[in-house]
Image (tube, rainbow, N blue to C red):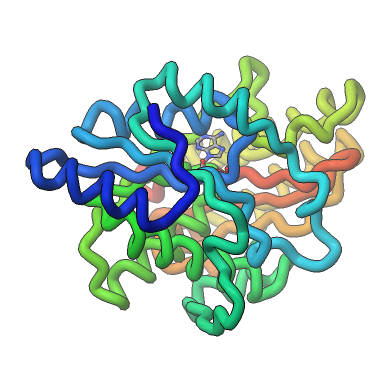
Length: 283
Ligand code: AMP
């Protein structure tokens, strides 16, 4: 596996692979790898001749009061894990490589970014995501790019970006990888101390409880959401949001009469956690 720091070198490596007719897969990440990241890498390895993983803690997607400075970083460990998964290139640029002096362009995907994490973290978060993803697509020109369903809103934003800008890349969403007790894996889980780590399991339990109600025939969004809220409350968690929304366009939903996304964000101890569950209407 090669660790590459410059855009020019990545481009050259991708050009060489293309000359050999190898399909190119890209996995964008911010590092601090866990099994969720590795699942994306495995999917990419299975489908492609060249696998590029980007490792870049993108400053523009963090708000001023968020955790940019303390975000977990361990490139040496990440490199070992990526190499073990058969990754060909770890692209780990410095911020100055991605945002040189004079950088002036922002991509804003409207609508989808007004709700859930967009409303909570501010529009700039998804502007930062859309802009860095567009840059990575421009640099690597992948055939396929892999994203985790854990960040369901991010997947929708990236799909919209690809459609609207006619980018020639297929987006693959990979199911959320969880700990044995159901907690969705996240680089931010390292912020959880023992008690908070235990309480954090309530997020998945809340989603499961709501999903069971839906599977049993409940269609009223208020009732479905209340079932989840009750589980959170029992663990002393007041969510930043807990909402059932249309799984495709994130419009508000009164009734589960089409596929819904039940999404939650909550602060637990020192960590801000998100999770979600797809609820099918045709159970
Ligand atoms: P991050 O490094 O947190 O920006 O995540 C990089 C990619 O891994 C994103 O597409 C995430 O959605 C995905 N990801 C993060 N956690 C998980 C997980 N538990 N299961 C599946 N994918 C994940």
